[in-house]
Length: 424
Image (cartoon, rainbow, N blue to C red):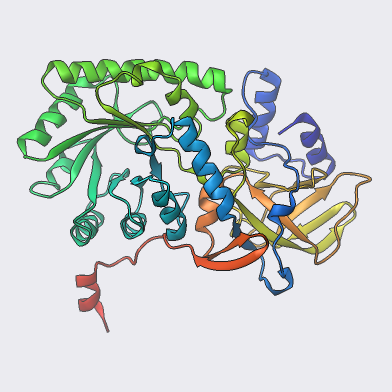
């Protein structure tokens, strides 16, 4: 957020800044970190939706032509090779979007939930890594889906012996989850003996060792130059680990790195280009893009917003302020405040939302939107925003079609066999 926007925030009466906005102030003062999100995005008539008088708001709007554009831009950066992209479908969510990826030749997917796995398999994916440490009934459900789609290569992550043993005699591939310092899941790079032991255990059980998963998603607040510097150091350590495994007779088939923020850093790391293993990147946000990813990625890459939230002005609670019907139950607030920007309206600053209300301050002297006016919001974090909606409007040249957000949420909490017994 720019200093001017922070000043506008203060003028709006929201004196207690959320922690992430305060953090953003500190980063601006340091002048050594990237903006957390873009400040504005110009209006373009291609985003206009016809017959908005018949649309219930807030509404998720997806633009298939721009989805295709973003897919093509990614493939161009990958030198036209779709096999190098193991896209994380937590963002795409819609089966129709996943089918568009498949039509472009992208058939290697990553998923986090069993519903995402199911949707990916139904969309034509050929190889899906469930990049989440599934346990218990979740693991049993994963196996059911794998058996249902036996023409799809399904792989899982492990980081300990308990996770390894639950896949004994099962037809799944195994990736080791390596912790790049994000401290969310995985084995620390320094624990090579633990990695060696697990790889040996995979082979002793007769399972297929597919490779290493390394999600370095913690560097989004750095500039691209700073980001790549620290990320490349991590990749150096990762390749040292690979060499240790190879000297012990364990070949590496695939290494998966890089969500959206570190995607350019993976591309610029030259040792990946000459490696004997397959190196795949796994950005997912770039299919739709959001205010954060557009700040993190160079404008030269050519990405465009392909998903917006259509909202209406429902109140003008006081001078210099309006309220829209797009609270945090529609536009996710997980990445902080402001939760979005308003396309074509840099004079509007979204403030802290409640469940269904999104107040905005209006820059002094600027035109104040009228009650009932429609606005188009570019979320700060598109992935959970898509997950907030049951359906999406697909818009091409203003014309609307409706598609379900197929992989929204999760499957039911009981396995089918238990559900039958549980009926009352």
